[in-house]
Amino acid sequence: MTVKFPSAEEVASDVSFTEAQLDDNMIQQPALVAHYGRLLAEAQYDADTNKQMMEIAESKAANKLREAANDEGRKITESLINSTLPTVKAVAVAREKFNRSKSDHEVMKTTFEAFRQKKDMMVQIGVNRRAEIEGKINGLIRADKQDEAAQAARREAKAMTAKLDDK
Image 1: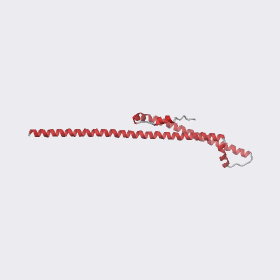
Image 2: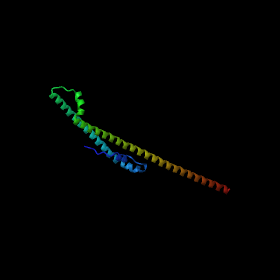
Image 3: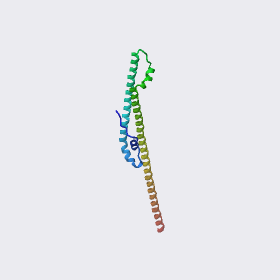
Image 4: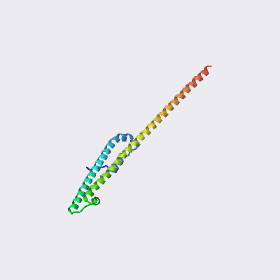
């Protein structure tokens, strides 16, 4: 299975956001995490499959080397087999596929981590927004209470003035 990974530009676009787009991004985040999570799982599967294929290629090549040595009546050491394996074309191809898929998996892990960080940033911006709104509300409440106190003081002053005028 070959996974079609998004380009770096697509990933950058999916991970980036502005505070003005916060609400839309919060709504889109779960779908993006699901999409990239699936890509991460597929990358892991590819890496695991390619590792198995590499191990099979190495085993077959090692067996052929042993058989050839046996047919020639000579002994071959495991050390010689291990040092010869990288030169066997099937093993080299399998190792390249495994290394590529392992690299792709690491890239997807990093990409997925970027979405975790995006979530953390969105949460922090949301918390900051909430604190800002609460601060404004508390300021309005304080101003309203001060206004009420001022009005009460004016009423009391008028009442006192009226009492003085009556005397």
